[in-house]
Length: 338
Length: 288
Image (cartoon, rainbow over all chains, first blue to last red; front, side):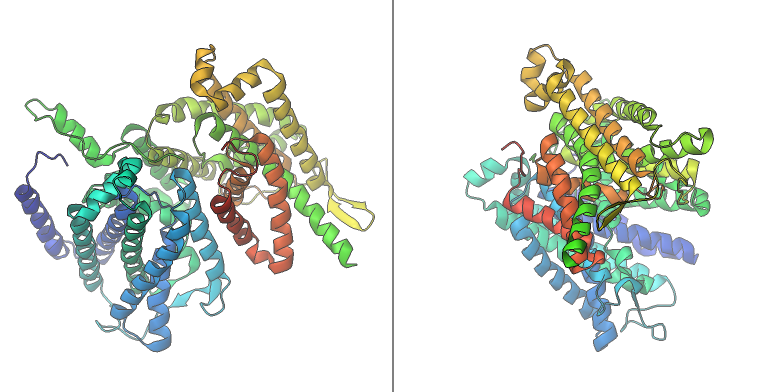
């Protein structure tokens, strides 16, 4: 969004959006359509979480599935072995993922650009292989959540509606964290690291320290999203939570909407999940590949024509409208190169 | 007895490593010339395999005989990809570049699935089939011929880059784009050439393994991560480095699979990627 909009208008817009989201299931009562809304909120939550490290701090992770998977497996294992409620399990998953992010970020943040992205892919792929071959985690077979229980304690529901409000709550939490970071001095440091790393270093900003903060917070929130996925699907296996395609999708949601913008990933999720689901239901049933072609064509078009995402595109349009105030471009197209 | 097994393992590692090298030289060439990582490189290999398959299925041309055709076809694909997509993202942020080639990867897979179905296909009764035995060591003739072909193509590429005017111009562009432009080298033409050659190399690798490897739309995913490891180990942009690294990666993969367990061989190769990135990011022969 352009800086021409003042905070109160933005605040009103956000409140209206939240109110709309809260009452939407009253209008959309069909389970499959409610499921579709849940998928959008899940995608938005992942994208907003990724945006903290990939957008604000400009560290392109293509391995976020590792945090997603850690979250899903931690809460599920705690529920299955200790009977621990997923409310605490999700926090535990977040903590494990945060610790993993620290351990992984410490060496990997010595790398820039392509090199960092590749290292994150490698970490997630290695993790997927290790979990696939782990007997304790049931390997490739996967884990089933208890089918005979339901309710708020075990966070398993027979209808879609409670899931909708749980993921909406998690999305709001994630957006709030992201918003708080954006407004704090940490957010300024993140952007400095992204746009002018050398200048930031010269001013005494510890690059590694702030990159680690970004990755750790992002990992924590992504893992909570993973725990939610396990609760909703009631089944997880390495391919469904650790796959690189998930990492790519997480990043894509943010890029599509607008990298480094608070609500960019939310818009990105609405667009991406809608296209994904509709092309799947319209063309995908035969396994013909049409859904993949549409998905891919969209990725390429965005990459080629709108590097700053749909929000960037809207900003450009606004600027070209007659009578529009010339607005500053908030996010820089500059990125670290190896 | 143990020595024989070890020798057998090393030979099969060498044979597959040479294929990895051929896939990776194209990837490293593209990166060296224009700093773009091509996530769709495995799909060029996949298209090469399908080119062989259809040459065989429709015209009964053996994959080995069809190789020049495969190379030409994939050269065209590479140039088209450059002209339609890559040319537009040369100055885009890294993120856009990653997603453009990543989108290409899914697009090519989707198109292959759309036109040729997701089935696994095999080419039966190729000219090269059966086993060869060197004393106690046995290996398949198709694998041997493929490795030999990979050496030939990589060697030819090296000769082209170092012994011809056009190849030298391409090398010059890789070393210093601006200086090359000042010397009258058309950068755009060189970029297109790099994509053509890169795709042709991957396509040739596909054609060579089509005699013994199942052909399906997602076959490229088996090769792309390994090709990245090879490129990083060899040093981004170094063709000679990629050749050496391909052999090393092949050996480590097969040896690691033999010692630790085949299910962990990819994890071992990816750990090698992490180690190289952290210890020596410029790889064996990369520019500092």
